[in-house]
Image 1 (cartoon, each protein chain N blue to C red):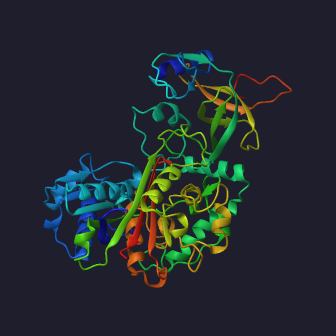
Image 2: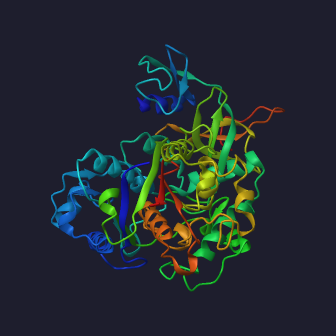
Length: 381
Length: 129
């Protein structure tokens, strides 16, 4: 458990914005600070990535800040869960007092997302994998799904249930990209256009603009601010691979380690979690992560999510915003996992609120199941 | 270093690094052994036999020059390391099926290692088809 809390949280504009990355960053930061009742000059720590080579410095320049602590670890979608850990440590060590973690992407408006991904010329992946034309990251998750189904006899329909639940949540979230559309069925998911078998377009996250920010400070100071503090209870991380061949067993992810570390630090067990925000780049990502974090055993996640158990009104609410599958996915989705976790713990979620939620989990996944980071958050009791 | 791997494909030889200190096999090639940290490694030929760890049929081209559908796979070599590759031939693929290396010619005389179903009742062609 740490003596640090999240005191502000906000999204930038979402969807198809036509805005620049830095505009979305500025929206997110100013809205999160307003939410916290703080001002720009309070900020002395900044963590962000995905802007430029000097991401944190770039955003600091744009905001007119000279932070004394910055963080720009690049780990894809889970970077922001890692930043929570680093920020908590920096605040507790006294290096800085108020940290903003932010993100913004205009990938949809800018049409900058490619099915080929980004393969840098000097990497082994460029020489040994790119010649075979895998879709990045799609084909890797597809192979993980195939292996998972084979190893445990899991039916294809189990993966689809994840997308169905995400859509049901999104229909309750006015900010969701799929809000106002129709419910999704298992048949819809299976009959959507195949991209990299067995996964269809409906197994994959959205490609949208979006961003967000959270503000952290000491718990002591947080108790004097306008919002109820959301405590950072625990965190953990593990990175495993960049290549598609490094991991021996595709069904076992770094979430095993990141989750165990986070629960140990918090003094909690999976059964203590009231609501979980679990990175859903693809449907399979959620199943593998649920197992890795210990919510169920190996091969059991299909049954765990079956029959709407993780959807609205289900026994274990997962991805209550609608997730990357139906709410928003701006390339690196992990920041928005934190925003939704905070809102659930503050009881701000309206129709999709999980009643009495006191402990929330946010788990980010980056790359091709490459990087994993878990954060446990809780109300201040 | 990775050139040695590709040069061997001119003679249709599949080679994988072996650590001279501990015998660990690894792919892709590196300047150190990921098992023991040793820095003395050699390329050693492998049998070309393996099993399908997993596979996916790609339906959209990631870049010009690719013609979907094609089957990308992780093949676990009998010697241990996993290769990313293609599965070729008219096979209803499943995980754990046995495969054998085949060679797809590249314009410069090298070959791309791909894999086809390993049959026990007949000699496999060294060519892709």
